[in-house]
Image (cartoon, rainbow, N blue to C red; front, side, top):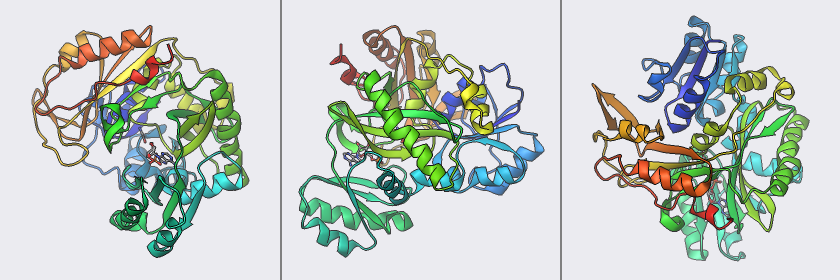
Length: 421
Ligand code: AMP
Ligand code: GLY
């Protein structure tokens, strides 16, 4: 099978790493890819992943059998719709289904209509109405921009003043912030369940937990995710069963009722309190860094599963997972998620690999035989081990041999798992 992967982050490197293990793979391309992905696929940088027509043309020229779309933007922009028009299969939802992530209002209204557990909410089309409503609320509340805002369109307001500022800040998200959702604040512990779906069947992957805040102890600004581990013990078998019955199967049948077929990876961001899961958000793609811990635990052939999702026969596939534990620590540029330096040389990648880590490139570029930083999240360092304690110990040993100027990472990744032992 000839495969084209879209994207350039740590998630896409993890996808490439796993797809490359499939005996079904023939030619493998990535647009645009990154220096890590380049070990597995031919990276094509002279076409833009943002231009659907360029990607479609390239996929036709190279006789691509399956396009795997990593990030949300091309999904929301209808890349899969365009590929389908010329008869090319994709792993990832079409634009109508990708609205689950592309519009918080679409997702919230669908959950409300089909009684899928989530935070109570109100929708506002202008800031003044939102502010009037906030006068009547208890705090904290959560203020969200409707559209895609690169993970930054969510503000937890601790009091009335902060909530007014948050409403004003939504203007900074352009069209994405022109409508606002005000949401009840949910207490609990978060977890991520990614799931494979062919539009009829939905199969959860092994559970994971992200660490969204920049500093230890969940302090500081929100980021794309500073580390993850899998499985997440907060997702007990009982919780997982509830997630399947009350959330995953229900959202797929809700979409079907609305005449929308969702195929690809559906990501449910969950808040779990007293064993009851509620939806924080849906994403229409694999999570990052969650993918960097989930895929190293997947025993089955990822490419086979992706093809089954695209062809609508996921029920024929057996999906099995290793009994191990995986931990990923993200190494970020100092200053991230605000401004940071780029083009700093990275040392120690080979050494960390020789200690047993899988190094996923997230924001790097190649300069001759050097690897330089080129993004906020630079590398993901993943290890798998028999248990969580060993995995934590080993991952930080591997992190310890990697260096670049102002490198920042959290020292408490997976610490939340220890309380369950
Ligand atoms: P989102 O982009 O919707 O995932 O929100 C980003 C982060 O904000 C989530 O991972 C949660 O930590 C937090 N969050 C969002 N909505 C809520 C909520 N209703 N209650 C509590 N925390 C929330
Ligand atoms: N790790 C959070 C996300 O992928 O949205």
